[in-house]
Picture 1: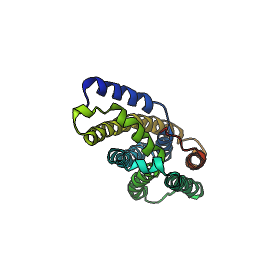
Picture 2: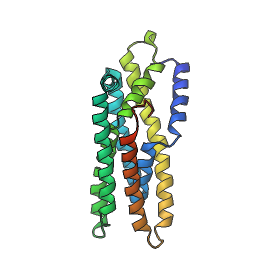
Picture 3: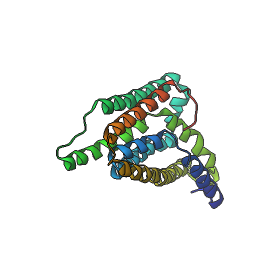
Length: 212
């Protein structure tokens, strides 16, 4: 475990990074506006679970493959972009379910969790981010490097879940106040679908930079 000073610096740096809205926040906001607070929370957990895989990859050196291989990086990147675009097109062309909403919501929450996890798993920049960020706070004199990276990564995921949940609450609350307005459901579907497609295109056309 890092010493208290390094740990404090890590938490401060992590929070500074997390309070700036990024693709994960946009995904959570879209889900929260689309299906409410619970869907937002579930998408946050899905993203967090997917992030744990990237933490493990950073700890055990798997992310080095993405650093050294442009082909591997591009394959993962374009798979993630295609999946986001698919989700967006699916949303734009779907019809709102009106029958048995409770059953629809229960099934959707499981799907949303896995979609959030897959979206994050197929983001190579997340893998590169942890590969570059976490080792900077590791002290080899404090014991196992792998253990320290896993600990810091888990702590980052916990902080991310907390901050992203705030966005889920805010977005869902805003949507709740607008649902009574005519045309909101149609506009909501267009907004959510467009966000996913834009995120997919941004992923596809972005460079191989190391930022999250």
